[in-house]
Length: 92
Picture 1 (cartoon, rainbow, N blue to C red):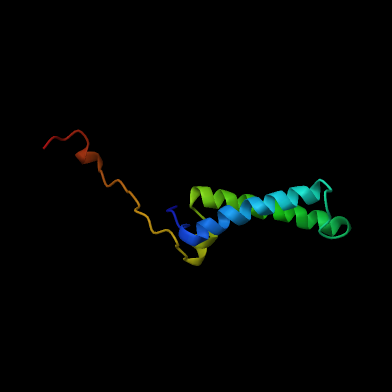
Picture 2: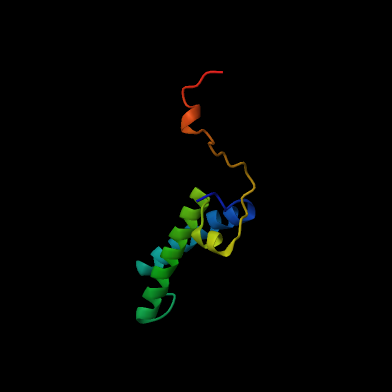
């Protein structure tokens, strides 16, 4: 999969990902409540999960959802090797 996360999209993921992880973890540890009972635990767990996904996609710059939706915010150069087996070891 080619890189498809860059620019402001990547910055937003770098900011929101850790924030969601911290808020979700704090709620799971009981430092505060998001909602009462099991719903609060489910929301906190979901916040941690979404935060982890955002953080990983920010670091790797590859997002399967962006790929499925045809979105690409990455503007860097992609390096691809076009060396074939016949070119290996050949001198000019």
